[in-house]
Structures are given as C-alpha cells and as structure tokens.
Length: 265
Image (cartoon, rainbow, N blue to C red; front, top):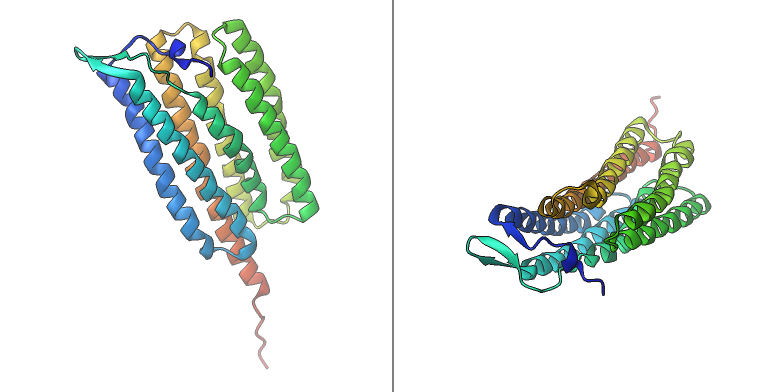
C-alpha cells in the first residue's frame, strides 16, 4: 500500500489539525443523516423513481463508512505535543477516498439517469458510457495522486480530464436531447443538478493540484483534505436532495397526467 505519510507535514498547529478533524466529523454526520432521510423518503415518490432515491441512500452510506475510516486514520497519524500536532509514524491512508469514489461516482451518475425513468435501452446506453468514463477518470487520477513527482501528477491529471470532459458531454449534450418532454420544473432542477456536479467535481482537480503549485506543505495538505471533503458534501448528500426533488416533481406530474378528467353534463 502506498505510504501517504510522505505527504503529511511533520507538524500542524492545533487549528490546522482541528480544521481537518472537524470537517471529517461534519461530513460523517451529514452522510449518516442523508442516508436516514433517503431510505425513508423513497415511499414519498412513485415506484419507478425509487431506485434513484435508494441509490442516493447507498452512496451516502458508503461515503459515511469511508469517512469514518479516513477520520480514524487522520487521528492516528498525529499526536499533540507541546501545543502542536506532530506525526506519529502511523500511515494516513488517504486511499480510502479512491476506494469510495470508485464505487460512489458511477452510482452518482446512475442515479442521475435513473430518476428520469428513461426507456430501458436509452438508459442502459447512458449507464454504460458514464460508468466506463467514470472508472477511467478515477483510475488515471489515482495514478497521479499517489505520485510525489510533479510532472507525473500533471500528466496523469491531464489524462484523467479527458473522460471527465466526456462525462460532461454526455450529461449536457446527449442527455440534454432527451429531456425536452420533461416538465419545466424538472428541466430547471436537472440543470441545477448538472451544474452542482460540475461545481463539486471542479473542486477535486483544484485540491489535486495544490501540491504542484508550490504551496507550503501544511497549507497544501489541509487544502487537499478540506477541499475533497467539501466536494464530497456537495456531490453526495446535496446532489441526492436534488435527485429526490426531481423524483417528487415527476411523481406529482405523473399523478396529474393520470388523474381522471371530470366532465359536466
């Protein structure tokens, strides 16, 4: 296993350590709360939209588990001595993030399509394209992430950007052509959801590039951990709430369409 201790600064102030520690704690709580909400909220939408809500619940549950492991690993990596935190020699295993993303990122894309309840063949084609692109993006990004050579990180970061751009193409261009028959509120929510995905995923490369920008070791380390955590909060529980909102609107729209029309004699 790659030794992430090499990326940790030898010492942190109490404020720096606590900022990361508390952001992990907040993220765990948010993921657990979101999981409880999604698993209970599935009964509030029509049956054909429930898979998307269940996937949202699974995504935040998986994330809660991995953040619990990251939290414990961070806590074990430092010890308080003379008012500052110094490394203990324990490995900070940040690879838990990629273990999480390799599962949850494809699921996030799946829930995006599932909530629209598109025809099976159309949905299947989109699932295959998006999942393959997501896996390629993460695998190539991971190769760069574990390198401490700036040139290597830059090269693999650029390579991982290619499938990322393809995902955006599928979500904006290909999916955009399929939502013309959606009600205006769903179109608006879907646009917000896609923009949130772009915004949250845009945080990841910024955090990824921090060590390459000549930023001080402690600042870069803190920026990476807090940046990734903020991005995960946006991309998982907040994103899931938008999926739930779309499912609710579509459920209500379906009910109006199928409601019997009363006639007056």
